[in-house]
Length: 455
Image 1 (cartoon, rainbow, N blue to C red):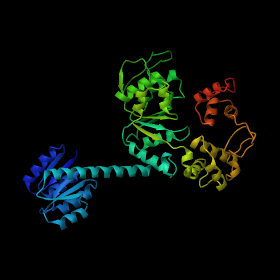
Image 2 (image 1 turned 60 degrees about the horizontal axis):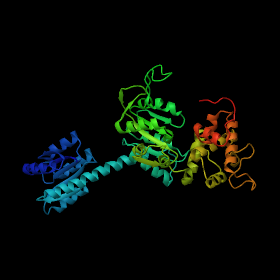
Image 3 (image 1 turned 90 degrees about the horizontal axis):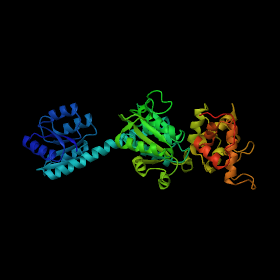
Image 4 (image 1 turned 120 degrees about the vertical axis):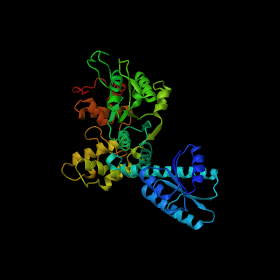
């Protein structure tokens, strides 16, 4: 439905058109001369102006010019006497959407009005989309101009202005939080807080109180009332990263928040309104978790309002150069780039760790290069035991290809390089701390020790 301004010096026609269009749900204002129409357009916004051409002293062409100057997105449909084609063509050249000849047929008018309103709405949407796409560049971390990244920007631009829940899917290291921050930055909530929580990094027993807050005395150690992250993100955006790791109790409360926009702090019967946009991210298919009974299907579909799949680095190799320059610049090497020979090797590599792996590789090359330029020798693609780093396919034909053995070797190396700190070791490996502990248990490395971990 639209807000329409009728302009015609025949009062009876204005009355009939107003009644016909209002009966179809439109909000209609009618005036009998062009000057009054221009005054109204200057004072308030209309979706469509339906104007006669033959009026004195301000005619329909002047009305079109004034409307397009004041409000370029407002559609204009003109009414003209039968046979006055030359004037109608002039109106179209001036920006009118369509013209109708008198005597008019109300069904035809209603049809053209609906078309014009739809076209005007699409034009406004496209203009907003182009504006957002222009601003989704380096500042938001979406580096590259590959077809995959351009498509990603378009999806972000379309959904960002809405309040829709977005499920961001992609492998570990592809940049799901970068996408979430871009969504926030391009949304109406950009001035509000952006809060991210990794559901896998917080013990299941603590995640509920972290997200929803708690009341004093709700459990041992709850010495005061505390708001949770949903309330802390009020007016902004909350990212639930690795949502598949949330336990059953948290999933149930999340479903209620998404459905009713209300929550209860742990131990508090009082309901609280929630003003936050929820984004969720996962690096594994939630469908398999549903099949195992580990994830609620109803919550899945609440999160799946607008899915965005972030492409892995191997599907956007055209962005390698731009990403490498970006990371070098962040390390203080403005204007530097990688040698062509190194870039060729990068393009042949499968990138299991995605953009995060590339970032770590560039940082490692920067450290190895010291104060000099980064050379091909500084670009080490695989990091294993000290002195054993090599590119895939370039190694010893007798090398141990057993996956568990390789995993044990990499984990031991990471923990050693992290000085025994398993949190830092997990970051070096591109996995979460919880995942590292799971791998340690699976591979029989639970007794692997070092200096005390940090929480």
